[in-house]
Image (spheres, rainbow, N blue to C red):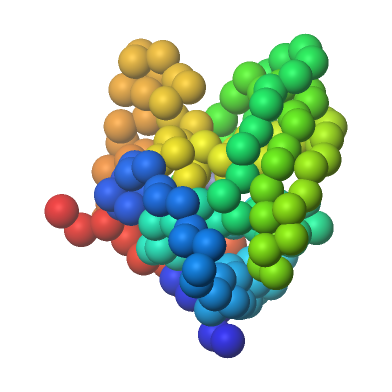
Length: 173
Ligand SMILES: [Zn+2]
């Protein structure tokens, strides 16, 4: 499977809530596309289906494990840390996250899992879960902080990226 293009903010596919993946369907094709794409990007720690243009509730989380139709419960204290996103190359944004999440999900063989993830692994899951909800970490910024980034967003739309390169799909209005 070839690595897919990563869709870049503010492409509409990143701003739309994803649908549950139907249980009578085979997720293999989507999972293989996600794995091939993430394996091609050494700096990547997770990848959600909408980031390759597929609006289903599937993502790769810690250790590239497959999460299908996940439900999460936020637990524990919160902490603010810098986060980056493959769909927003070149930005690191402070985001408040819970230090513990309880997750229920299916893997690529439709086996159900229930696990608790802490700290960095839990943060990856919260970030990827936001993607399938159609959110990016910009929704967690104040209006003023967001407006300060307007030039950065204009450059992103034009495909001006000063960053390590991987195949990207830019949004042309
Ligand atoms: Zn992201």
